[in-house]
Image (cartoon, rainbow, N blue to C red; front, side):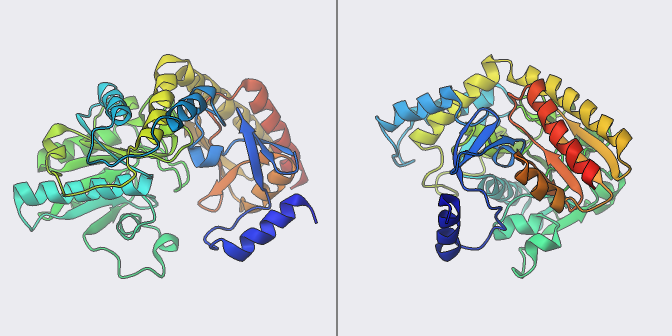
Amino acid sequence: MSNAQSWIDRGLTHVAKTYGRYPLVAARGKGCWLTDIDGKKYLDFFAGVAVNNLGHCHPEVVAALQDQAGKLLHCSNFFHIPQQIELAGMLCEHSFGDRVFFCNSGAEANEAALKLARKYSLDNHGHDRFEIITAKNSFHGRTIATISATDQEKISTGFGPLVPGFKYVPFGDLEAVKTTIGPQTCAIMLEPIQGEGGINIPPAGYLQAVRELCDQNGLLLIFDEVQVGLGRTGKLFAYQHDGVEPDVMTLAKALAAGPPIGAMVAREKYAAALGAGTHGSTFGGNPLLAAAGVAAMNVYLNGDILENSVAMGNYLRAQLEQLQTKYSFIAQVRGQGLMVGMELTIEGGGIVKTALDRGLLINCTAGKVLRFVPPLIVTDEEIDHMIEILDRIFKEL
């Protein structure tokens, strides 16, 4: 029995079966490459589900973790934490926000945003305004509230009754938003680009028009940037492409480029609704994770990460479009920066498994959309290598 199979067998015995796992036992990573326990290397165009934006084990993040681990791992949020304060300042300085609430994941950040919207509305408009409009095919997390906000039956089946107060509209359909806003609406929550829904990009001007609707109706605008934020689309935050600012933004995934941390960024006017005792998180923004976040933010802000995301994103889409001219089952290539989807007319799950066998990590979402979210440090040579593997797989189809 191989070393990998031994670990797989132990995992199948003791670990909860909440994931359909592939037969890969991860051991270490560097840059855009992941190595399994038997020494096989994989070119990683999945990046831990768009988490490892700086690649595996970025040296500045690793150094920050090592340094902080020897000083203080954790202390209560009843006390002031310098690393957390520094990270909050960086996020506010480079966004629309004034205040940051730290947590551990994207779902928790979205949960905080939903609570904030309802609490602010209660304080300012009374009990009758509590509904939140979200988009069909969205994904906001796995808590009861966030699966209620996520209009995907495969996510919510078996967990009813869901939290009431959510209404769903087709993504990108402005008229549907207009007709759905009612006297009980308090907020609109959108991903600037839908990730799990299939790399769906809204029409030009859509986000700006939704902003105007929120202003006209006194609604909070919440942007879920858990997957699209932190350079993924070529700007630090995806909303910056559209010249529109939300009232609340949620972050996680790549915020510390690996370690688990989430954040809700909000304008002062709205953040004030969550006073002392209204919300919390034991581990949110603790010294270790916040130190990693500060290190990651320094790389995002001071290196060429954003420029590389734009350049390599353009190159990746161009190479995928070349494949589209060769294979009739490729319906569309779309994306922004290094958040790219290839929509097929056939199911993509088998392609993902074959790619794994060939040393390439990709993912399929929405059944027929191959998702490419490599580290933002990816090179054109690595993209070429990925295209070669994909081309050979497509030829065999």
